[in-house]
Image (cartoon, protein in one colour):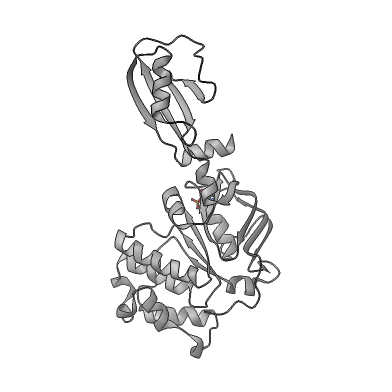
Length: 314
Ligand code: ADP
């Protein structure tokens, strides 16, 4: 690992980052990133979360120099991507989403070529160490086309680390990776993080981000709608919705539930959304019965990523 020469406060910093893709044919241009301000603290395990099409890859690809931004600025490890592209590029390793790689190179060769591309001198190369770390040393002489999907994914992680970047970005890394290999991948990524590498993970799985990341940013339709410590974000979600179908229609207004969110459903059911830290199902049921309602049916709805979006964009 190359020791970072200086220690910036932020591993990645974007200010007003904007991207509009030109229209294809008769289509409309796509405003993929809308003036994003985002700072990834040095040393964090950072989750960039959002549904498909939110703009995550666009953000990552601007940092990697694959997409040209339309406005704003970005720096990696303190190096501006426009003013100092060489150092910016050298400070980041990106594991792309697609598994495209040259089928005729072996993992050993692929790493040597990649190291050469980054100008890493032969004596400083760590091909064996990196291949061992991702569990591919045994496969160092196998053709890439003979590797399984999980092995290819790990080879991509290995390639992203040849120049010892202080920042590693994984773009949707677990697509098509089975459970065992996923665990192995995360073990390696966690060990990199423990050694001081800042990790940025893009995913559309809240659970994955929740399990791994200390900080989560959420983008939706090209806009940043949240960026905060994971526990804080999740604490916004300590809610449940109790949906009750009454035996006979309830009389409105339905009073006595001003401390929770009350909503009628088109089916005649009513929904009570409450904070689990403040109320329990037991208490809600007691109160519903005390209000004279005979319960015909009930269900409980848990919050999901969509609910965070609603909550955050409300
Ligand atoms: P995500 O990675 O969150 O799924 P993307 O950054 O890939 O989102 O896409 C954001 C938006 O930009 C989407 O509407 C997508 O269709 C559009 N987009 C992405 N790449 C291109 C491109 N090369 N040309 C035109 N539109 C694109």
